[in-house]
Structure formats: C-alpha cells, structure tokens
Length: 169
Image 1 (cartoon, rainbow, N blue to C red):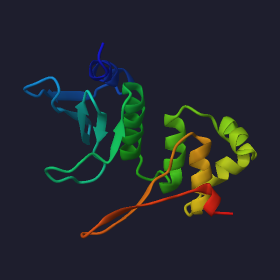
Image 2 (cartoon, rainbow, N blue to C red):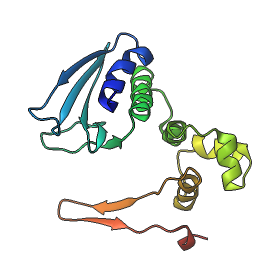
Image 3 (spheres, rainbow, N blue to C red):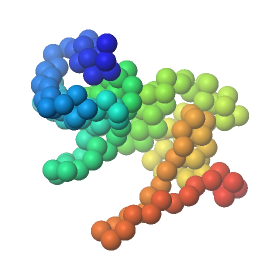
C-alpha cells in the first residue's frame, strides 16, 4: 500500500464524512492533488512520491509551495485532524502549536520534560505561553529531536539564520 493510498483510506476513519477528490498526474512521479472537504472546512493537499504530503495553511497563489510537509501518511493524517479541529473551534489558543508539534511526534509531556531535565509542569507552562524566548524554543525543539530553522526574508532576499543552543545562555 502506498502512502497516498494509506492517507486516502484512513482519512475517513479519523474524520467521518470527509470528502476527498483526487486529481492524478499524467505520470506516476508527478503531483497528486487532493481536495478535502468536511462540512465548511476545505483544504488542498499536494502529494508527490519523492516528497510526501504538502499542506497549504494560508491563502495560496498559483505556483506557491506548501507551508508544511509530512513524509509519513500517519503524521499527515494527524496534522489534518488538528487543522480540522482548529477550524471547528477557532478559539483555540495560538500557542497550542507547540503542543501540536509534540503530539505529531507522539511524545508525552512527561517524556519531553525528562529529556529537557525539567518538570512536566514547566513543559505545560511553555506550551500555554503566548510569548516564548528563542532559547526556550530551541531547547523545546531539540528535546523533541527537531531542528529549528529561522529565515529572514523580504521581497528582495531570503537568508537562513543559524541557530545554536550554545549562542544562548
């Protein structure tokens, strides 16, 4: 079973009533487009065998790249479920994105706290904050096994900003 087939098969299990329209390319290595609709919620997902599932989270224009990319179908399904939940309850705290990333990694707060050598309550407080220090964010991501990247950009340039925990006391 391909990852695309897995995604299409299990999306209705996680999200009963979801409608999936698939636009297939002329060759197998091309872009597969999935239009997903559940009630008032609609999104488009791009799938390519060599890249995985690309989610468009903002208004996009023709030729834009996806904002989020997931190589595994199960992780893409969890993210889709999170996106639908956000659409249904827009009052969700903005800071919940940390929790969403941790949940995508399937890591409980207690395990993350152990890897960061802090108490679970400290992880909970960080996840509920609206303003987070960059050094705390770097540590949090490293505790999840994730490398954080920051880019500076405007209409004329884009530059990666190197981050290292050692730069921040």
